[in-house]
Image (cartoon, rainbow over all chains, first blue to last red; front, top):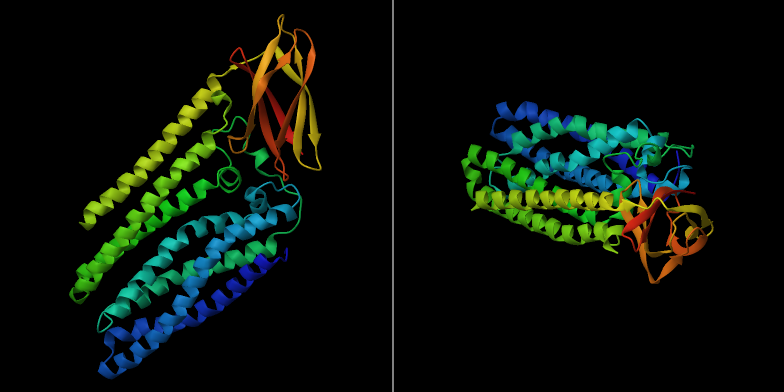
Length: 263
Length: 134
């Protein structure tokens, strides 16, 4: 392992996340098992337990979302510490195979974690917490992803060491039809980072909007809050789509400027 | 209203991706359309490894007449992006059947990369040289 401030933070977030997931999953399992058959009194106790669970899950998911962003910054900071690494491709080579799976997981987690967070926000605004059962169930479904996410982070950063690695120049040569995505986005055309993040958030917000619509049609008491939330989600999604498209203009100019044909 | 906005988002994202793809294809087409100058070759490269700079290159001409180098560009192979370019004013002269030194002064990636250096002539052709750094 290479100990730097960022790898230390990632390790701490991983251990912290794993411990909280283990704690919260047992709570969620109990609520999920009992809530369907609970009487009025037990339901009240379960609701109180759920609010504790909800707070813990918020901490877990927000810490994992922060870790998803820090993942790229940490990998970027490791480049000078790994001989032969020219970009994050080299860092991933040093932490292979966990790094590759972790990268794939990091690209999708925000979509999944966001579903729970959005639904919980709605649940808090509706009397009687109609989504209590569904949220416990969704969290149980998220547990394997959370465990995979945290364990892969720990495995990756414990595996990565300052060994000499072959970097992207071995794979992405002049005959390659596609460029190295790490060199392209993180080093030579960083404006595309804004485009990718904006479009990604836009797609995520639309996806969460569809999930909200699904639950709004299932629970009539959620109609007003749900419709309001859907409108807000879609408006934000449109705003991010516009930001992404506006950022695309300087991004393309960045790629085109100074080409040999322009002189 | 919400459905209209969702369709709007999809239209904006798809339009953005389409524009990116069209520009990339156009740019690559333009780059490959630049004729290669066979009468000029880069026979020496001066690098400063302390400042990570491509200081200059020696160009050898086997052409029967003099030629002028109007500009130089450095394309990073791994990303396919022109990372540096410059226009020479006045253009640099390369006499017939001789060698000339062309000062460049392009910054290179300290971690290393492969590049194509293009030297564009007044004939609309370009001498191309692969440079691996460090």
